[in-house]
Length: 93
Image (cartoon, rainbow, N blue to C red; front, side, top):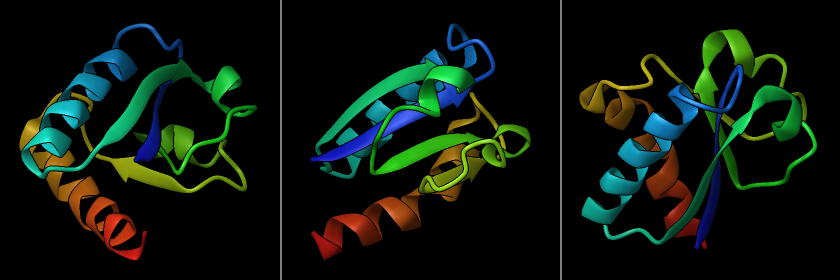
C-alpha cells in the first residue's frame, strides 16, 4: 500500500479535492493507497511515500518525495502528472 499526502496551503479545500481524484485514479489502476489531505505546515512533519502538491508549495517540502501537479481538479492533468511515478513505485515494491 502506498501512503500519499496531498498538500495545499490550508489543507481544507484543494488538497481534499485532489485526494478524491487520486483515490479514484488509483482505484482505476488497481493500486491500493492510504491517502489523506494536509496543510503545508502539518505536511512538513509527516511521513509518506509521496507528497502531491502544486509547484509553488513543492519547494517547501524539503527532503520529501514530492510529485508536482499542474491542477488540483483536472483529472487528466493529475493523471498525467502522477501516473508514471505511482506505477513505478508500485512495480518496485
